[in-house]
Image (tube, rainbow, N blue to C red):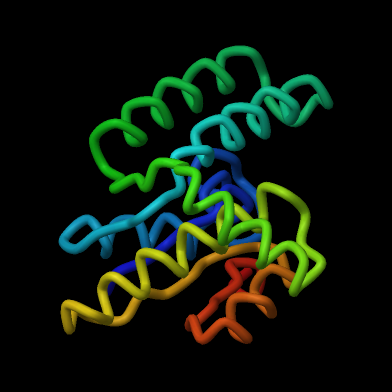
Length: 153
């Protein structure tokens, strides 16, 4: 299978929370195939991990391990789509259409772009993975298959 993870789903691979086991299982299974990310996901995941430490959800040593693992995975294990002017135009339209937050619209624009490219080449289905219900709804309206790690305890 081929997946697109937004940051709300991907962070679950580095922090123990609801849906973490499912995300880790998908990451292991997808190692044979592919996991796509928007390049901004790197910033979002680092931010989420550091904020979690600041709020007391991580010990310093756990944060260091999580950051190191994520940085390694980000370079080695994920296919990334850079944010371009065209992607921003698509994201602006999606934000307007679905009343999405800014980076959520960028995530959906990236996923939709990859999904369309894969469809044109006759490649397998892309599954959009997000822990944000509103974003998953927008992805479904846009024609993507969406799944929420929070549905898997």
